[in-house]
Structure formats: C-alpha cells, structure tokens
Image (cartoon, rainbow, N blue to C red):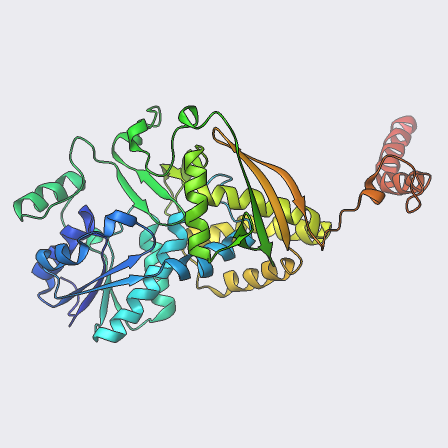
Length: 406
C-alpha cells in the first residue's frame, strides 16, 4: 500500500477483475469501498450485481442508469465525426470509459471518498482512459490501479484467488477470454483470441448471428437525421438509447457489424480485438450517406482530414481534453445541414445505402445530368483543365529543356 485513503470508489462490473479487486482493496487498504456500477446497456450482466458486490465486501453500492447520456453525449458526438480508429474500430469501449470516470468522480463527492479505482491492467488502454478522466475532472482524487500494485501475474491467478475467497466469476481457465458490453458494442479479447490465427468461435458472439445464418431476404429501413443526429427509424421518433438498441436488434439479426482486427494500443503494443457493433455500423453508413448530399465538398474534406486525430484522442483517453472539445466544435459546425432521410438494405452481413434525400440537399439532377442543361457550359472545362495542369506542364517542359541543353 503506497497511499493512505479514507474511502474508495471502485468502477465495478461484477466480472472477474473487479470482483477480485473489491476484496483486495478491502484487505490491502482497510477502508470502506463503494462499488460503482454504470448501466451502459450491459443487459443481464447487471442482474444481481448489488447483492454480489455486497457479498464480496462492498460497504455501499451505487448503480446508475447512464444509457441515455452515453448514447446522446458520447456515441452521437463521435458519430457526427464519423470517428473510427485504424479504419475498423468504432470506439465502443473508448467512449464508455470517460463517462464511467465522470460517474465515479461524482460518486466520490457524494460519498465523501478521496480515492478512485479501476480494474484496467497495466498493459491496456483503459487505465489511461480512466485516469485521464479522473485527472481532468478532479485532480485531488487519489488513483489506485491494483493491476500495477499487486503480485498477481494474470487472470488464472485471479481465478484461483476468487475461488479461494468464495467469489463467483463468469470465466474459467478453459474459456478465459474477456468481454466488455455496452449499447454501442461488445468487445472480446485475451485467452484463445491471443493467437491471431485462431478464428473466433461462433458461440462467442452475443449481439449478432453469423452472416451465413442471417435471413435469406433483406431488411429495409429508413433513418431520419437532424443536424447529424439520428432521430427516427422508419418514421418512428426515438430517443438516443432506444434508437441504438433498436438498430442493434435489426443489425444483429442480419449479421451486421462484426470486426476482427489487430490494433495498436496507446501503450505501444499490438492487441487483437473482436467486436460486434451492429447498430453503430448501420448509423455510420447512414450518416456518411446523409453527409454526401448535404455537406460542402471542401468543408468535409477538411473535416475528414482531422478525423483520424479525433479518433486517436478518443481511443487514447483524451475525451475531456481541450483539443477534443475544439475538434468537436468544428465537427458540429459541419453538421448544421445534415438533415434528411437515408434508406438502407441489410443482408447477410452487408449494410448498403440504397437511397438518400434531404430538403437541404446540395445535389440536384439538373446540375449533374449528362443531358443538356443551362447551368454548365462544357466548353468551360477546357480552361479549367489547362489551369489545373499548368504546373505539371511547366515542370515537364523545364525538364525537357534541361535535357536538351545538356
């Protein structure tokens, strides 16, 4: 024990790591521990979590329903940016951690705690995401990261500890991969997935059927957007959490949103992650289509050039940073005309845009037609091309002139 603390708020999920951590904190620090559980859409995983936390040693338990603010204040801002890390990952865990950290900080104030703790390992990204959140929101709080303090070497040690202390855990040495679920996705890593040649077993997946098992007939749907945010599906207005949950069901039934990738962690190592993000995948495709007819070309090109940086900020844990907030303001400015309807077809793992319309559309068939029109003189293209190619022409003439002189 390196610090003296009065009370600790632990980010508690009821899984293997945080169950062991709860008991370990009690034994190591000898102070009250508040188990803080955030409901981000884990579903049945939260069943009995209060009783389990109390039985494991928690002095107090706080369970908060954060599904609506999670989607409204974290998922949708990232959606407006089309944020995606390394071209594959839709940032499901990355977006959840700053919200949990914010909830812990508020809980610490409520319960008079002077320390916060999390279950992230010393090798992963989550330790950074949690702790940068704590620092940004309340730098006076002490931070306890058990994986950087204790002598346990891996999850098999934790399983042994849990069994010896009568703590039930949802994993075994035979099936040791870990998962993290919220309304945006479920992620899997570790264990059998650490061999990058192994195909993920089909019985691992939770939110989606395999594309092979999806229906033989496509599902069509329409999504309404207002200023870059989805607000209705098939004409039915929905709140953020309800809408994403509905799209998760439709996408999952059609095998949408599975990703198997090897990504680069912030701490410097590569890691394999398998993700299911059915609703998020649908929303990103729909949002890109809505932007394609409502956004100015140069505005979107500038915005898109900054999105890899935005995604890195979120992935690395800088949600509460001034640079992310600055970029968010720029992104949101680009969304003021992203309003309209997108029609999509879901079929055996594919999400295809088949229609888009908007009262604010910049696309007009009279301008784009290959037939005769009154707004574009094709002869004007000659001067445009000459000026566009002038520097190329000059460079080649000078090169040829130099060779001739020699």
